Length: 275
Image (cartoon, rainbow, N blue to C red; front, side):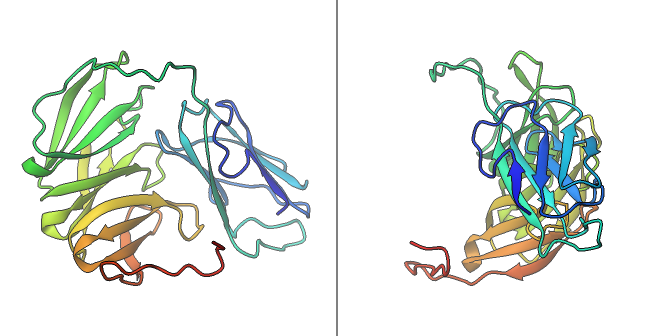
C-alpha cells in the first residue's frame, strides 16, 4: 500500500470526505468485509465502494461524518490484487473530523439529577435520530443510565440498565456491525465486562458477560487484529494487567491475550518505538 486519504491521525478531516487507499498494484473491488469504516459516534458506516481494477480503492459514506468524530478504518487481509496477491498484514488507522467554530467558553446549561456515583460517560447517537446522546456509568447505583438528547442539547433519562455491579467504565462501539452503537461496561465489583446490545432505537439489553477480570477500571475499543470488527481492551486494576478481548464479528468476545503485568513503580520497556 502506498497511501491513504484522509491521512492517518489527521485531526481536521472534512466531514464530507471520501476514504481512499492507493496501492502499488491493481486491486479487486472492496467490500464491507475487506474495507470497513467505523464512526465513534455512529457505529459501522454504510456507503459505496469504487475503484475495482485500479490502484485506488475508495469508500464514499452514505452520510457526512459528525463534527469531532473519531473514524477508524480497517483494510483487512481479504483485500487482494487482480493478480491474487493479498496484503502482507492488515492496515488499521484513525483520523478525526473537523469541528465548527467556537469560543472555548463553556456555560452550565443543564444539570441532569439522579445519578449515583457517576464514574464514566460515553457519547454517541444511541437512538439514530442524528443528535448525540449520553450513557452514564453509575457506580453507586450499579447501573447504566441512557440520557437522550432532544436535539437542542437538553438531556433526560430514557432508561436504566440495572445489574451492573460497580459500573466503573464504559465504551460505545458497534460490536455486531449492524450500524448502531452498543455498549461495554466494566463492572469493578463483579470482576467482569458486560456487553449491552442496542436495538437501534437506544434500548439496550444484556447480550453477554465476560468474567475473569480483576477489578476492571477502564475500557477502550479498536480493531486490534485487523479483521474488520471492533475488539476491546480492559485495564484490570486488581491484577496490574490488560486483557485483550477478541470479537468474533457478532459481538461475542473471548479473552485473547493478557499483557505483561507491571508492579507499582515499574516502568514498561517499549522496543523499536524510539525515544
